[in-house]
Image 1 (cartoon, rainbow, N blue to C red):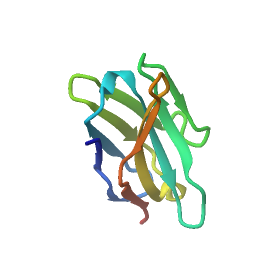
Image 2: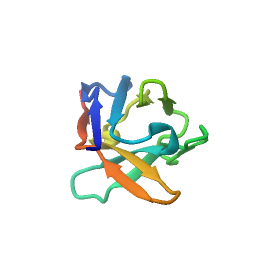
Image 3: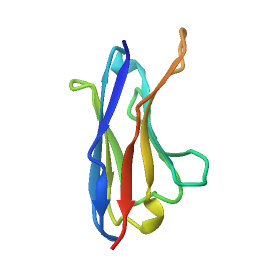
Image 4: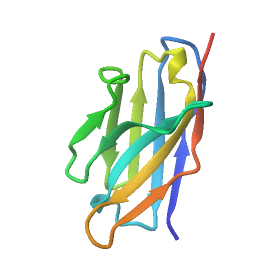
Length: 118
């Protein structure tokens, strides 16, 4: 059974920092690209950051320079370090695991709420 479990969400003031973690089980973690997505109220889910199985990273323009995605294959965990948080970063953040080689698979975590407010 595949499980992705996010942790580290919460309430933070503008300009603050948070680190999200996503622990994966039931997949061959090292073969998956791991992504962070977010969905704000009334908006579509959007990609925040992704790290491939080889360690390449890509970021949404809105978070580039503020957020850093990393992975620890030994711990089956992906992280999202978020600095200089803004109110517009408020959303539910979802962890995603995607394997693009056959057999292809995509899995999602249940999400964790991030609220940036004073």
